[in-house]
Image (cartoon, rainbow, N blue to C red; front, top):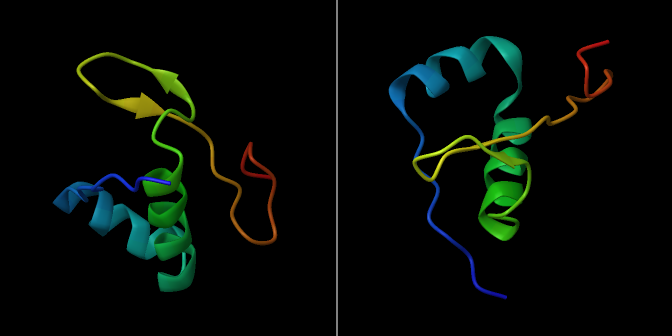
Length: 61
């Protein structure tokens, strides 16, 4: 399995601090690195996908 590099932009880091724990953020980054084709392509090499946080569903519930 080949891992890809994941770049965290400052805006993502800022928002992630208020939305998830450090462990959840690292799990998200690991998932993206291992599954680079997950989600839907929105152009420019950017992909959009949902990631369920602990205690909630994928739609935020």
